[in-house]
Image 1: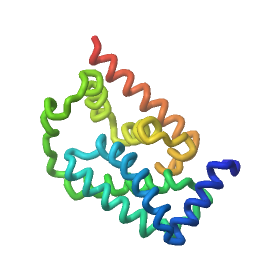
Image 2: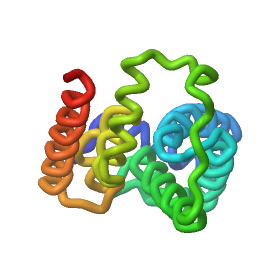
Image 3: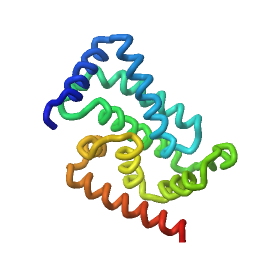
Length: 175
């Protein structure tokens, strides 16, 4: 990725974090918490689980950012790589149990949002992860490839298959 103003500011922000700048850390936590929680919403069964994994992810980021050089990946890619591992750790620990989601009435979801969420949950894990990282979190294909440890072409292919599978599931719900 060619150096641009965004990557330069990302590098500068990383240096502030590594230097222990309190304002930078407050900004990091505020920005990442919202986006990460949204990402975790589609990957974990309960609010408590989301909060726990969010805290684990942020704590891991605080420790790992000291060693992160930011040369081969953006801070966002780095953070979501950690989040993916924390979600995988959660499911490894809880592989034999699955809680039912909170009542639908309590979630106050629109019918379309419910259909989308159900369709996402029916997708294979790597399809769901790719779609969420690309469209919910906003990672570009290069960042997605880095966070999922794929080549650029493999990430493009995965996104294409994921979109097709989601489209097929959504078509089933409408007919």
